[in-house]
Length: 113
Length: 115
Image 1: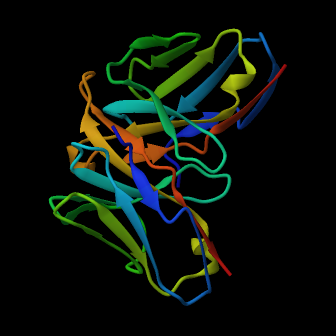
Image 2 (image 1 turned 30 degrees about the vertical axis):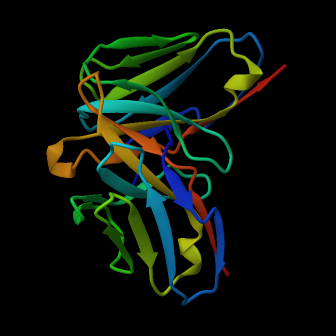
Image 3 (image 1 turned 45 degrees about the horizontal axis):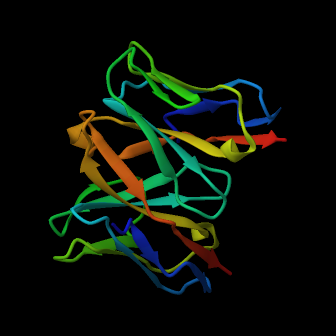
């Protein structure tokens, strides 16, 4: 059972478009991480958000943590073909769970030139 | 600085066999976690090792076991393989980040195919 629901599941856009990926849960997380994964490789950490309402920017990527720390979003401005990949959100609960990560199923993004 | 490394890269086994996967964490990281990622799914937490002991375990049967060595490297063992065990097995090591939370770094994974 996935604690985190990601939407959309698939997204195909053209270079230069903007997009937003959502990550929702009914559970509260102490932190939430976003990863990007290429086929056949391990996930690569993009950002960690910790505080409710927090916004972090990484070049053209903007990450937001919901006020209640149950949801998050990833916004990409002017997408490029190099942004293609599987975007995964993962939440860590607390020390009782060892901060093990609970992952969503991911959003598969394809950016065409 | 080497990242998380895993071996082997690919493995093909027959149903009922046993398999051992290996992981070396990033330098300075002492906690190792294992995840299973089935095709089209997000990774699922198997277990976590710290100070050579299993500290946390996800919803996986006892056929899945592990070990951590004094140098923090780790092994994942799976007995009596089932077809459903076919997946990408990911190892992750973690560090307390400057943002006030743990950050987990993943290896490239081992692709296990059970026939």
